[in-house]
Image 1: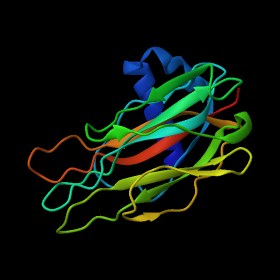
Image 2 (image 1 turned 120 degrees about the vertical axis):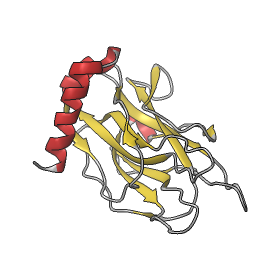
Image 3 (image 1 turned 30 degrees about the horizontal axis):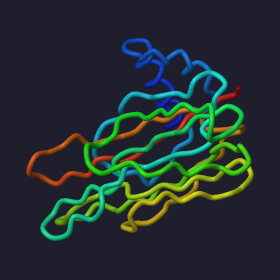
Image 4 (image 1 turned 120 degrees about the horizontal axis):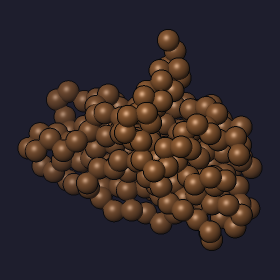
Length: 199
């Protein structure tokens, strides 16, 4: 079974057993876009979807600033989608999957002209043994008009390849987050996948 088919099966099982109020939108998505360089730690959380007829026109990040020595860096902790219909900065709904506990939310970045997010690339620091691991550090999106938006994340690690594009736009997300580990090394957000909707 391929990676995309496994993701769709997991989402179907999740929606059947324990879906949130918006889980009915899972039947509306046409594909899942992901990348291959996500961090190895944590578990996939619940998916969250934009309301019917809404697409993600912008995003914001929850980022912990560098902690210095001997602090424990977690870098990227969360991603919010700003879902819109019509005017991008009005008539919006904000959705997020699970986020880590550290850091603060940035101001949203918007696609110009009412466009939608269609593809993404994730900046990830490769595992360091021994060392202070951070996993995902930043994300950038490509808009439907070709504009690229890079989040205000940290510079550790490298951006991987771009995901495949959504035919129309992103309409939901699901994050992979490592839970707090006490006195051990924390990484928070490790990976993310996004859903494409048809209408």
